[in-house]
Length: 526
Ligand SMILES: [Zn+2]
Image (cartoon, rainbow, N blue to C red):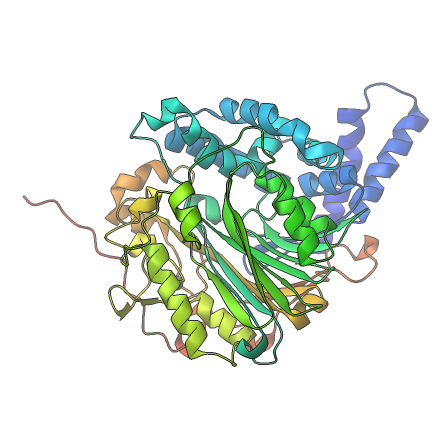
């Protein structure tokens, strides 16, 4: 079915579903007005698919952008919710109802009217298409990382249970560079997201958000999220933002402001790095504590914010680079807020830190979009001194790593690692554009059944997991034309033909040797 047909079908479904579900009372004319208003809301929105990504354009009031989001991603939200309901109890021994209750109690009042309305809109939009969901589900999804990896560990009962994940999920390899470090002196930024494949294969949403107030945002995201979640943002204020998570961070302040709220508000309402820092540093709750990388294309300045609970440390420069690989940057943060060992050269965060520094120095003055894409697919393991994806490489493949990543409670060959990658520079940011690649940016596909054959210990994931193919680099921009009848024409998406290659070809061109095969099934000794 073409996208135009899909869009028309969606619009038609909206016309039919809305009055039945939401207008039990009231006169015909009131119903007609309400239907008209919901139809108008959808007429400003757009959904299109390309190369493993789902691109949505959202526009209007908080209620409208929420409704559009819920409506256009109803199927994906439904599936994500199903996964969370199985995954969260398995990894944290807390049922989904705990997440709903905790999110409501800890966060609902703190996120303010605008984001409450947007979250309610998401739930209503998805519900209109048959998804059994309410605002607490959507809120809990948005707060999932903060609750599962920070709030739950802060509860005494969990700390006494060795079976439960104790650490934040790994999340990412990233860099930002400017001045004499880049080819034209502009800012270049890149990020790849590391997480369990069972979750990360759904981190394939690109949102072009045109809110009624504040700045327009282009970001990658997850179904139902009002933020990016793995965090890659371009705003029309000229800000370019990403992060990597601080490994083995501890502490959670139930009175603090949630991370997903602070980052969304900071990105939507800031015109400068200073504005943005103020919001991010305003009473953090310690949840999803990250080292943020931010650049302002208007000034060429970049900054790094170590956004802890007790420590909020900022570095800034107009000529330099910052990298992120899940290591805490500052000794004070490391000592006071983590159990991270900065002296262990063999751990993934420290290994990737070294690789990033090497790549930056090796490419000083040459860093551009082409190199940024290559960095995302880098497979040099500085510990094993070999070219093969592992838990120590910038493009992460813990499913191929016999040692696993124990700092993150990922056992040997855990099915997790890089799930997507994004890059941009100042010129792209000025055009509200970014490049994104779904799956491993090196081109290696994750095949579930082949993997489970070798590693049946992860069989519990079968009912919620699937393959994670890797797609080509694809350019996404904000939709520029008047929409409406043009819904589905894929405005805002371009694929550069020279980059539109199959994954194997890209791998060859990038000069990487053939990736190691997935190990053969290991039979127990007879
Ligand atoms: Zn890779």
